[in-house]
Image 1 (spheres, helix red, strand yellow):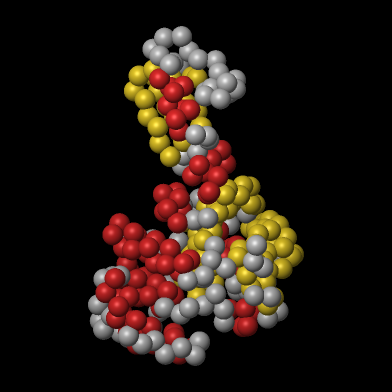
Image 2: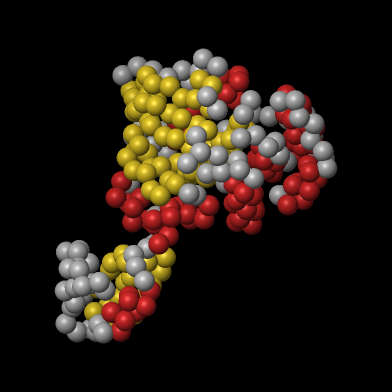
Length: 291
């Protein structure tokens, strides 16, 4: 496996007696897309700001490309494009002027790709920001974030205020960034968009990392549900005993990882109706920590 691009070791942030982030440990490699999940107040934004060196950690440290995010914050952030959760912009600028200005700050001069990406994101790039909606302004900043080919992209709730079409386009842009070898870390509370693009998901609860989910494992599973019309089965497709909670109130609910023909053969022998077989999603896992 490639050396990690971003590393957090026991990263902790306190505000007085309140612990906003508790001992975060995580590695993210080039070409990996990682989602940060949790409700409001779970520590997502604190984690991102600490990783970027905007907040001084109480304990622990974080590095980007080997540079300490607090002690060497400028060098670390040269390798990052960041979308904050809350935007404060130069409202007198046009979208194009803002994108050019932000590019020049990092030594880039955006070229023809500005117009190509603006078209994909449906942005009137030459309109003054003061005449744009909040969603349009967010798309302009997303444009500025997606243009530079930096090693790491960090996004705080990137789909907020975006319509469904633009959400889909953003997810496609994140897939393209992954294909170029860029790492992506983004926070969200929308499970479906995380499922669509992430290689790994981190679930936070009250500032603590409570679960890491490899999406490849999740995508191998199938969620099976059906109404039982006769004698309930006691063993599963592989002959294993069914979990105690697999049958509740006359309904079968289980997660299966294995060959599909074996599952279908087993189901055909059972007295079932209203059968559904769906890809396993994040919802039941997320609800274990945020029910």
